[in-house]
Image (cartoon, rainbow, N blue to C red; front, side, top):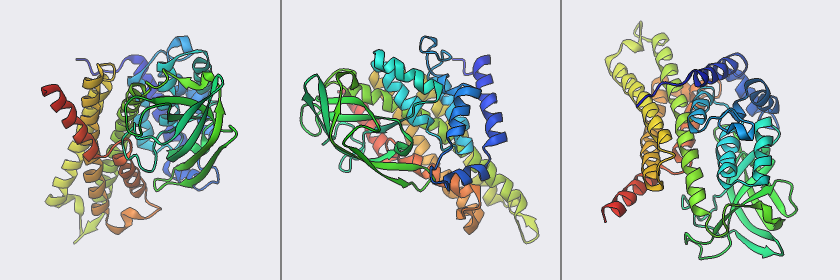
Length: 381
């Protein structure tokens, strides 16, 4: 299997890396998190107009560059290295994923707006009681003439404060945790009856509690098939999880590099602590975990077009491994830095916070291990 990038993919990676190195250093990022908005629309416009990365994973028919999951992986790893806040995962990977797979005139039109940088998305799926069960929904959608009315509460909707559109999962039938009866809707953020409570997250980003009270949407708001939306949700979440693994790979590389640089400079007993064998062993373990994370991300990404069970096992295997790596590498980085590792002024603490959030996003280590086990046992039966 050829793991080399094409010339176009290498150019995409290099152009984004140069842009971030020149215009998105740690202090710039730290300043962005302290603004009222919490992100920089000018950076988002640059992603669209100067770099074209918002269209990298869309087909040429949609006005994109003809890429797919590999392009998302390349972009997400570079964004992870720079701790970029802007909502690429939520908008391009998740929002774009739903729109591509669902299809239709409304979806195609919104894809064009995403590529142009004029539309952003957030995925409103999690509910307070749901944990990681994508079918555990109390939010309902009931028929209202040709359209629908949505009511419910969605928790910790990442990037919702910046979104122009929300992707909302709701029940159009079935019981609270049944696979049947799940539907997916595209809802404009300004719709009547939709309110949010916005707040910062520990990794410097923003999220919202989203409340829907008889929010009216048209028939075109339904993405995919009524009552049979769970396979679509699972597919897009697997794609998002693989992209998140790529972001984690970038974070892990920076955690290792930052720790190695610090250990070479920090002296005890008149000698750099990098010369202490026990710390050398820990930093080698960090390096190996970061490199293995890249390999696991490749494996997950290249299996996204496989049949559902094979795709799910590949993605959950990668996320379980990388979740453990986020814990071990992040904790080692902080311990080697000592107390200063958690100060706001030092980048390493911010990478640690993001790695910690990634470990639980779209399923914890324990969740993905259980998912792999359940899929393996089902196959054996």
